[in-house]
Image (cartoon, rainbow, N blue to C red; front, side, top):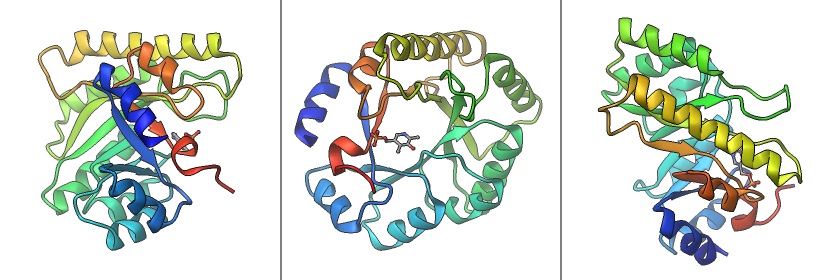
Length: 217
Ligand SMILES: *Cc1c(COP(=O)(O)O)cnc(C)c1O
């Protein structure tokens, strides 16, 4: 399955975030030995423990909703945080990254799904955040793109529309805020059930767990 996914990503030049939450270090090493280097986790405690034990050239991504008081635990090593949806969180990431003299990549999470329970910004909220950032530059965070989750549904037309929405948000942000900023380039969308659609709609990063590691219990 790993090779099949890598082959599917190649024409789009998209990256695979292997979502290893709840999976063992042996499971991770099996993919690592096949060449995978980007792994995504959502629970901070689990992420910190795995990062301490596993090879240092793994690029760890925090993909879940992140509480402000947990940022300090991952700041020493985290490469990218996918679910930034408030100035408060961004401020804390900047503060903790500075302590380690690091720059942490951050994706702005948008609410694109129909479910009301999911976190995320709308375009207006993102504009406010970026306005704040313009007035209060943060040297230890880098906004590298956007992230979203489609509705959990079998209706792939709906999911496609949601991915189109995220792509158009990215395009608007690019024009209005990041026109000459090459590092603003990532669209993180697509999971096991919908990643081929996400790629068709412009994903540069897909986050896949179940297809790679089997079901989580
Ligand atoms: C768990 C998770 C994934 C992976 O989901 P699968 O359906 O197992 O591929 C992707 N993104 C986020 C934010 C997740 O929490």
